[in-house]
Length: 237
Image 1: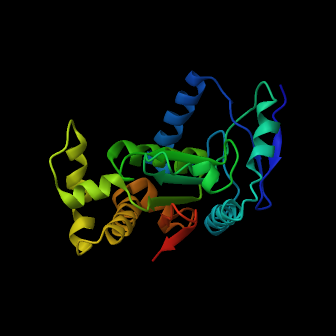
Image 2: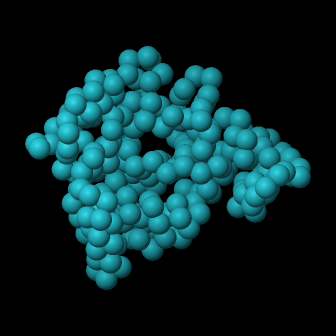
């Protein structure tokens, strides 16, 4: 079946998802990561042609459409979903988001199927599993910007700030959130923003794969804050 090419709102083009089989996907991913280890990242089946700055602008432009209630992603989704098969995925950006259900990443940035490589975990923490996923997104799929997205009233950060006893394994998040809590002066929003910046710095420096791409100017890692009341995303310095 012919893959449908959809036009991205930032002027680029992307093909829809639902591409190779799971086995092909895994083999391609492992081969790409092996190449990255041996001689630096190399494109595999899909590679965005965006620059890091263009990718970041596409995210922020989409967020403005979301805030202005002028979404375009549904038209793109409908065109893609009508196809029985497509060749590949070409996400131009990756987002590390909190697992909070009030932060629907594709909606927030008005991006269609296959445009954003999304990882989610409570507190938007750069765990080893998250880092591995984002390495794959950058080294194999060609994402050009990684946005760590904190959000207002984050329950994980709030729990770490309060330091109360919690059920199950929720308290396992506390240690990773502690640096942000210590830097916040007891203010929840300050802790949330500090955490986003800390996790972004970790991604850009602790991962040899991502650090190399950042140094080469092929990937940009930034932190942002999502306001639940307005829907606006602001970048954090």
